[in-house]
Length: 496
Image (cartoon, rainbow, N blue to C red):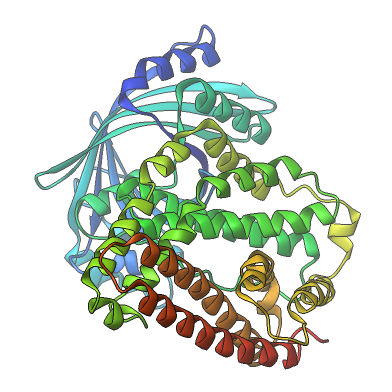
């Protein structure tokens, strides 16, 4: 078995010449080794290898063939780490018995899968390769250019791979930065195989818009736990980034936003523990500024949703409904987002956070403090801030709820990072009324936008509709008051 560790960077075809020049500059007088490679990827018709998170290919170079099984690995900030097994072959069809039997899971139906193997797609590309000395090892720099073929469908390949072979990780990231800043390279999270499955319509790429609790281990130290949470946040962000580039949607933008917010929360915890990440936090805050239009879009979407509380009433007011739908359409700033993700600072942040996850710099405090004890204390301190913000004798007004929403969201995201360490039932009971409050506060925004729309729309019964909007708001505030009082009475789940 070998462990593949490589950084993948996508290059726009229009920038290929500049990318090749930079490759040669990095290599000095060394000339590239050029080769023509054909890779055939195999699976069963029902994708049983994919069920086991395995990829199978035969690579052909001239008359030489090699079959490879790649197991599932991690992709963080463009760094791909995957175990792989190789075996020489003379056939155009894989023979799974050529691999050591120990690589298969106990329940793996080897002979059934072998009988059903079929080619799903292939890649044909030219590879130019340089081997660069790095410390006591080597960094392999390759430029791949060609196509992915699945039946009648094709997709271009134009990318840089930086593979670490005992070299210096810092030097590898330094090279990657030069490709981003000088030839507009983008951090790549989808392998050629992943893109091939998409092209063959054998997989889908859907945005993730609901974070999960990071699976922490009770015995870990604080550093291990926080870097695990940061890795999750970056992977969540980068998955949605890949979805955006494949098919731009508001859902993908929402997923990117959630990933950035989650990464920011983890970095804030690291900064409190004296890890220097302040520059990263500033960058993330700037990105979130470019994504601020989402809150307006979500508020308008709440009004227009067919299963929402306001759809039936608005159907009776076609002029108003049409105006709100136009506002919702105009709220989307997809071009702004697409420009953002192409920017150097966005790509560098993804890359550098990936480097942070891989290097995991830590000091004595991060290594010696137990994660669960730290999480209990940190959740208590954080909750005290939230409780103070929402503790009032009188009922809260809409402006106060809206002002405190970022604080509440940050607290709930901290729970995603370390809440897995505590009892699930206690955790969910505690969080439920706070989550109700988040939904209610976002509905306040929707009703605020509704009021603006009523005033801006001609030929509607403005006074009657404004009165109706006010009644809806008062009803919502009543429900929020109930959630607020319930939330403040909940027993904390982190007491140990």
